[in-house]
Length: 285
Ligand SMILES: Cc1ncc(COP(=O)(O)O)c(C=O)c1O
Image 1 (cartoon, rainbow, N blue to C red):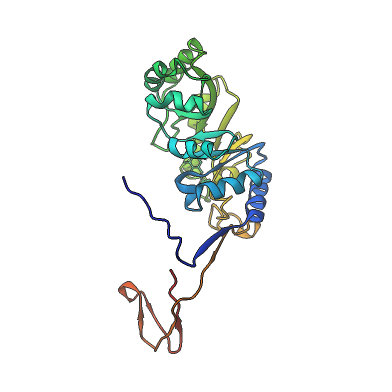
Image 2: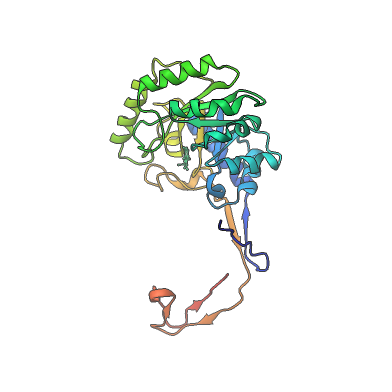
């Protein structure tokens, strides 16, 4: 087990701007015509800090939070977050009761998972909210056959005390550039697999790029946005100037050491930069 040390004894601090988070959520909601915005806070909220960013997101109008692993979701619940939480990757079936008891929306990508999880749900506080993940071309987790989807739906309907068919989702591998062929290929596959499949309360397919640039082609009532809310333009400016977003992070520090350089002095590993006469080197930690 690897534990990161928190360096409290140093003058460098990251601040999250509540104003920027609120603004970016509103911009995303507006562009996508979304009713429900989940903010992806996986991987320590993209490095912005799970609790700090989640707090700013909820205060700023986000309706739900999306995490990668069960422990992130449990940490949020333990810290009092009551908003809907979606766990986007596959949790081991033996934790099904913990998922249900904490009212977490759980991604399921195979019929086998439901069968494996069911025995663990006998004492659960409520039926487990299941979001079925469909692999339309990301190539990672998700159902790929309608036959298996049908079997899972039937199994959930046969066990209503254990499962609540709650979500249907896919994830686009490229939705944030002028290159749209693969996006359309994935979208066609989505339609093929889901058009005649019963739709649950939460159909969610859009990440930031899809939400910003494909809202007229896909369901966007519920979106799972990440980068755009963090203030990073999904197409890196290719499709839209980034000025509609506000930067979320501010880094402050104290200069603990400065030095003036001579022409040709190298700076850092592999002398990645060569100084001009009189420039200042300003390392911070
Ligand atoms: C399944 C899923 N949905 C949505 C997102 C958010 O993506 P983005 O940061 O591109 O908005 C992620 C992020 O990794 C994800 O894994």
